[in-house]
Length: 412
Image 1 (cartoon, rainbow, N blue to C red):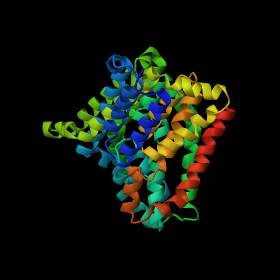
Image 2: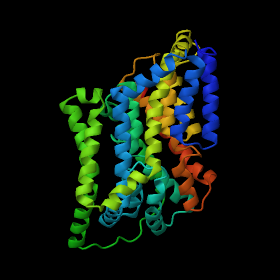
Image 3: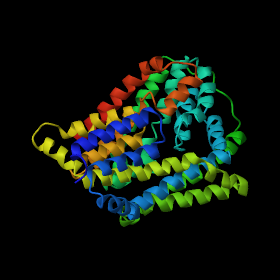
Image 4: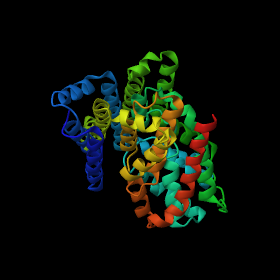
């Protein structure tokens, strides 16, 4: 046994986690150091290296780490080669409706899961929202909300990948449960963001210009589209690939290779993403999420909560909704929220597509409204608004989306 009982070790470790997050320490360092502290407090000394070794060599860990690295690498290469500019600019010229452009552009930029990525779409949204006469807080809301509508159904979202790896549920099965939530998020965002707002006079585009812009968009979007299609195709063709985490890994490699073919980067540009330390930090965080789970499992944490549920002290729905949402809100990280929530719940129940989806969407929605959420902070600053003014639109959107997720879990 370790120095203290498992429950005390968990409380101390999570207090340490809270301090690290408050100090804005890198999430990778935070999750891994929390896992190590929990191991030191709750496990025998000989169990610690065994737990770390078994986590590190596990096929699931290796695939998740490599996939996370590959996705972040592709995101950075999109930026460095400026292919992302082709993607966003061509789309803004194809669509003539300013409301649709303002809502679609952040979602398209959202295909690149980079920290604070809403800042990339902010200038584009600002231009269109200005034509609509939106106030700064409305511009900020539209940019934040619509950027994040895509992630619950985006198969190469690293948080969704980690959720699938932890719960053992195939990504397409989780996505299917979240499609209705995304539909509601889009409708709510459109109604709240553009209520009683009139479209300005339509811009004219020649057919030749439209065709060229459509071609430009399809070329720029093809690496992302190819990656998504390959993920879905591999799952339909061979489910065993998912069990080892190789489906997304193979798809990401193909998408990355296609991006290189399209952009034809110089060696200097190609090497630049590898020098971005943010990529390694997020990759390390993915490993930390799995190590934290392995440590809590070895310490028998889930058995404690299992007894509380059996005795009727805690309701399982509470653990799948409120706890993940609060953790997503407090950590300002969906990856941190999912990994911590799963570490608490693991062993209490056998995960199904329903419970895995509820765990993910609860954490994600909590993170979306977190005041420490980088996209939130950057967007509010860019549009010279305040968090309080944006919350006027964000909180109702959160509540409606959260209620939808819960209803789907209870009724479908």
